Length: 501
Image 1 (spheres, rainbow, N blue to C red):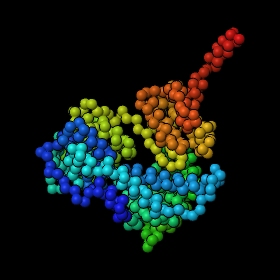
Image 2: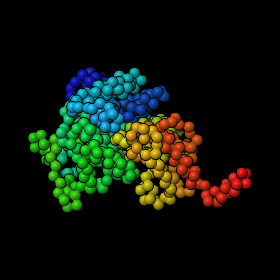
Image 3: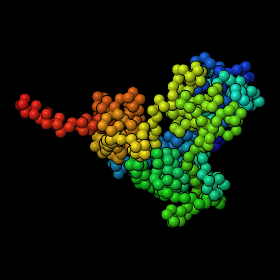
Image 4: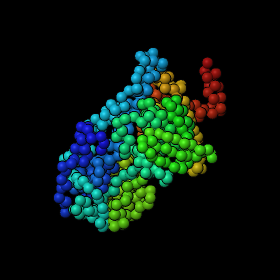
């Protein structure tokens, strides 16, 4: 973990202590968890809390991507870049003092490392040992249907949980691997800001880092193989985000094919084509954010009789693999590659594993949102209009623009909207998208309603503080209710009021 400073040494002291001694393996474990990211840590903690004998194996850093190279460092970077942007815009927008100078990028990254080290103890080996978990550091490999080998010891298990996560994928572009590009696993080790940064990929990671580095002052270019940014999200939401990033100075190239990457000295060159036109780019750093690859290699899954494909371990709705003793959750087996999804899956899978499939739940019962933490944020749950159209599902859509929201007006953040897709002729919510500052915090109200089976109308009965952006949810419900007032009903009400005048 670079750089080798006091903060990273404090981090390592918890997530992979240099002097850690693996315990002597028990005769048999009720649960052996492979992987110390969110899915594995939550699984181990729950099982140990229930009184099971648990082993946890991690080959690299406890805390996984989320703590070390994902959610935690990225949000620290995003917050810093937003502060820089607000400082620069304070005078023109709010009559504040003028900001001068370039800022201290090294200080931004040191703050990241300090905060990450402060969070690390909750995921650390000492803490999990204190919970009664046998923590093993080393490479795990199945040697049979109920045995795992790690660091020279054989662990016998009644049940095992595969939670090995995923890693950044490198597209098969000539010269890319040899150019030693940045990924999410290395970008947070930077101590100097690259003046010119190219990013391959326009998904959440690519866009979050593009906006952050542009606000730090880098010249950022995004090269995207898809026809638009954020292909899994609402197309209008993607347009709002791209417009925001463009104002920050990010240059986008969509529907491009990168034909060659090369690194000479301190400069990386990229060759690409779009509609027959050649694009040539020279940058100081290249970040690849173009998908993830599940960590299934070297696990010995064949020896355990666990089926898997290039997209990950194959599981049923109760997270069980083709080996009835082995379960898999998180990024290694799920299409929802989010920390909160891994956490939720662990809470269902552990009871399934320990109690013969009872007391847990099915993956289909989960209502999983996701958020892209750009400015503005995009939060989504359920189906997009494109997905509903592909499935041939009849639906109605209500869209409420944020420019009519008083809180958004007062804070000069009026871009965005709330959009909800309803089963045709009803208020049953099939999917929803929020585009605004704080959308990730607001989407929980929608998720909760969908989980309970409540319709859009339920939002009209919620009293929210004024002024808040969340008021837009109630306004959408009001819009739905007004739409239910048919011409016949209007005539009946008119006649009633005339008769009672």
